[in-house]
Length: 299
Image (cartoon, rainbow, N blue to C red; front, side):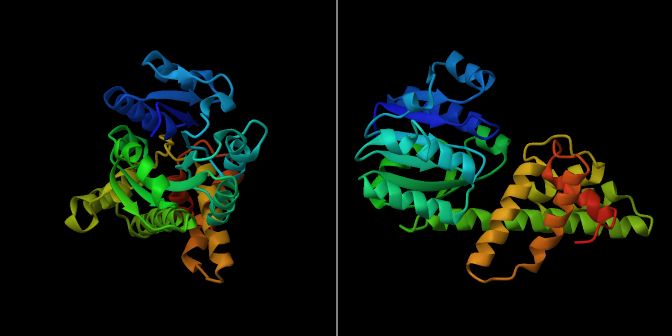
C-alpha cells in the first residue's frame, strides 16, 4: 500500500465507503485523495480531512492504488481509458481497485489492458445497501492478481465484514455480484406478486408482508427492507433507483446470453422496471417493480 490512496466516485455507495477509508487512513497512516464531479459530494469528505483532487488525474499516483465506485460500464471505461484516465497515469505496479457492478466482459477487457503495461486491475464488487456500507459491513467479492489483492486487502478490510477471494480470473467477481443482484430482483418480484395475490382475496398487503418478516424463514435485509416498502407502497427511499436496477438486469441478461443460458425468471422484473421507466418513475427505488406486479403488467 502507498501513502496516498485515490478514490473516484462519491455517490450513494461511494461516499460511505470513502468515509470508512478516511477513518482507516487516520489509523494506518495513509491519506485519501477524492474526486467526484459533484462538489456537494466532495464537501463532507474534505471537511473531515480528505484531499480534494480537482481533476480526475490528480487522484492517481504512479505506482499507487486508486479505487473507483462508478455507476456502469460506460463510466468505468471513461475513468479508466478516457483522456487523463487511470490507465494513462497509474504506471507500472499501480493497482486499480474497482468496486463497481459492471459487466464481466468489461472487467476482463480492462484487466488485459492494465497487465500489458505492468499495472493491475482488480474487481472487488460489493454487496450491501448504503446503510450497510456506512457500518463497514459490506460483503466483497474479490478476483484478480494475487499480489495486487494482497496489497489491496487492508483497504477492503476497512470497508467490509466478509471478503471472498474468488481466484485470478477478474471477471468472476462481477459475475458473482450479478448473480446476487438477480436473486434480489427475483425476491422483490416474488414479494410483489404474492402480495398482489393475497390482496385480491381481501388480505392487507402490508400485514401479509409484516407477517413474512416476523417468520424466521424470511428474516433478512432483502425481505425486511424491501418487504416494508412493498407493503406500504412507498418507494421514495431510492437507495437503489430504477435506472440502476435496469442497468444491472441488462447486465445479467447480457451475461447470460454470452454463455448461452436462458434465465426466464429475469424477464418479469426487467419488464416491470421498463414499465416504471415508461411511467416516469425513475426517481423511485427499484422495488417499485412490485407495484407493476400488483397491476398485472405482463412480463
